Image (tube, one colour):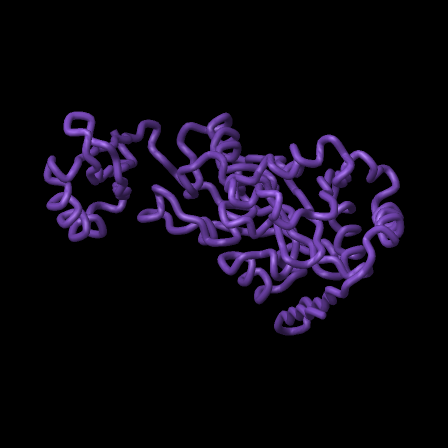
Length: 313
């Protein structure tokens, strides 16, 4: 028996989940009935549940599995995948996971190279939130409510639809999921001026271990602090974040500079380490080192690439 116990200070959240060997064949119907009984009547569960027998099971499972090492036949697979369409599906998943002793893995719609959100050594199912990706931007209040199934690229696009002089300081990869990125304290090219994603989180909606939907006031500050940088999946299921937008110029400048070892990359990297943190806060330069094949010599060499953003013309 494996026991997993979670204690949140001030009695905000308690979770006791027992992973006990059981027969899934005899529990399957009961689990489905539990989901049906605990979901909103207007939202049927049949169309959101994918089992091993469903022809779309593999497609749904692999849709956000970016690491082929976790796509082997020997990799433990979820007993089923629940692609939630409504908060009640999440509430039902939590209640039924506790009742049937199943581990619940939460996947929020972006890439997960470590596979933490879609495999386990214990009997488990995936609660997939990729359908919950609504983004509501308010330029009047300079804020936005973003559901955790959205990706960063979608957030940037929706902000740009409303304003050319607002942005949000998050990651550079458009397929990163909002849920994991923000709850883990994501960073990006505007971090030197505006900090991390969690520095600009105003509010959040979560579902706790008892199935309650809570905002910042209801969850209290200890839990809000925990989900803004400490990762959320150990505490709650995140529905959405309210983020504060920041001011950006109408025109910005981006540029990439590449140099190999033969082009003096070593000295450039050395100097970059000494000046990158001392430049004006409007400029950000990050470095990536890669092994490449030199086209002229046919030998392997090291390439340094400096990716830069300047908040100005």
